[in-house]
Image (tube, rainbow, N blue to C red; front, side, top):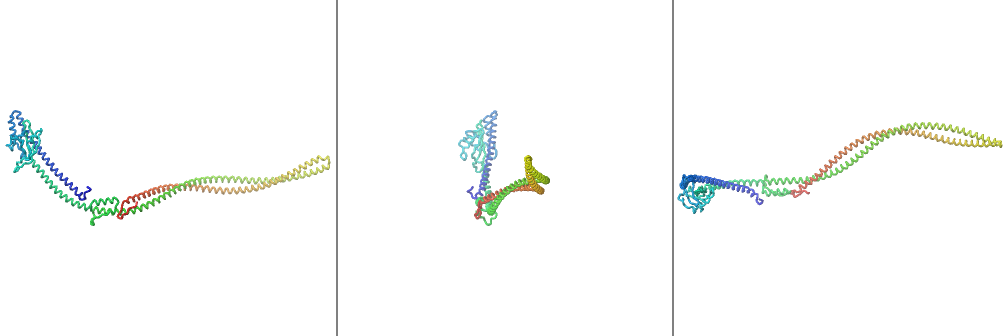
Length: 524
């Protein structure tokens, strides 16, 4: 098939159809011929059995004794001689020798030996009769025999059927001409040939116009269209395609239009694919950077949220500590109040001690005066004792001891005075210190009161800061959640941009197989 041209391929179905039509017509005529021959055979078989039944009838009469054997055979032959059917149907009777026993058309042949008798074709048909009659049901024999209806008579094909009646060794034969069937068959064949020729001529005309219409619709040899289609399928859009200038409806023209449109589309796709690839690459890179920055921002927000949680805890702890400090400052203020009262009491006590010290100085002055007077008295006593001599020695000793005691008392009084003066001086200093301490405590009390107020303000501010930081922490948590979602969206966008980049490269690879008329290809 590949070696046939387009026109040969167009004519080939017609030739095959005509050959098939011719075969169907001839086979139909042949089947009709065979059917009519089979009908003729069935007719001959039925007629031969009718003759056999006639012979059997007389054989039964012979068996019954109504007729002798000779009478029965004679009457049977006579009856068969008079049997006619159709235009030219009759019976003949021979024996297995073969010898003619009865022939209604040629009575002169009765009693003659038929062994060497042949038909016009040289066939020993009577010998064939004897041989065909041997099977139990008889048989058919073909031969030629002059047709009485023809002038002059002419030997034509005839079909004979023979059946044997064994008791009398008779072979009953009848035949029918089949030239009419053969003539009808040949007429059918001739008519089929004429009809075939007419149909073939009409179909040839139709095929000629159809082929012209198909060639005009295609616009050229389909092989060229197939090669161009293959080239387009392989991506070659620059193969030249030549059609007639007036051709605007053929397949070749449509293929040219398709190729040109496809070439334009490929050119636009080539340019668009490059732009899409560059934009996709930029988007992918930008999304990757954005994803990285968003992840960094999310990490920073997480760290800030953690720091804010810690700061919130610290501020909350500071607020609690500030409240505790405020309470402690209040307690310290109360303690300072009590300390101030105690300092005032200490100042009063120190004043009392100073007064008592002054009194003690006065008492010491009295003691010193007594010691001085005692010393004078002892000195006078010693003078008097010296004047007394021996009688006054004991008194002098006592006076000396008293003098020593007076001196010691004076010395001790001086020391006590010094100690008391020092104590008074120190008590004065202490009183001044106590007064200064009282003032300091008063100042401390005022400072503690101010600190308490400040600490209370700090505690209140810390509470407000803790509440604000909790709100800020909640806002940062929401921002962190949104940032995480944005990071996920950015990652999805980055993945989509990456997929777009890959698809743009796939698109470039897809259109890279096309080569347009200028020979350009899309770079991979």
